[in-house]
Image (cartoon, rainbow, N blue to C red; front, side):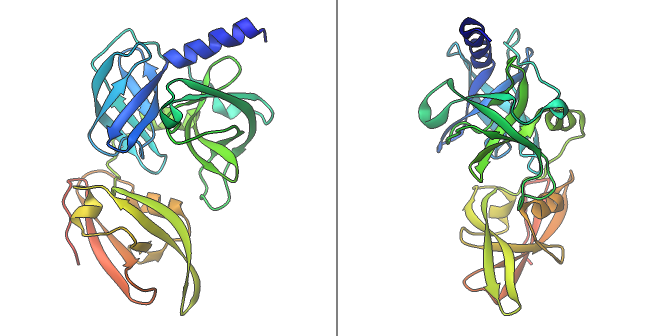
Length: 283
């Protein structure tokens, strides 16, 4: 690939990448998926109903979150604009280890930053359940979340999401297509979590440490607090983050009965979280 060709590919990707400002903690990234105003980003980026999207030419739009899937960590936003520079998605099933990977995003406030590497693998990651990820040896930083991971042609192979085991993890482009073709989902709890191992009377167990609770979220309405540790749902213990995602699946008003620890590892508490209508009731 000639240097001039690479420069053109990078510029096209930059024009398809947006800044997403969804809360006061800073900005993240997104990808223009349709010229008619459809933007893709991570569900953990767009946690509420609204966001602000800034294009490469500095135009800014109020965006509405039209779909979220925390299990896939994807969110779809809509902006009132047309004729946008939409990205071209690739068939992520055809990816092979060793292929060039290009990431564009807005890390640490640097808009349109580019980094390159290679695809390491495509498949599940130990400890993260059965979900498939595009795993790339590429450097990401806070602010890259929601931005595109592309191949050598500039076609989007995934949505950058996190770093694990020294590798960048992206939601595969084919999973994005499935997300967009599926029905609506309101599987949103409204928390930031970190997997932890805890020692209880019965031995070591898996838990999800609550780092942050979004005000007005189902978790907040159910009185969950930072430092709580989620250990199960509907009577089933968690063994991975994927288990919570599965428990959250669905749409419409419904109850999710969570088991959690607060202030100690032996006293299990329970709460019924109301999903789908932004109300919650403790039990």
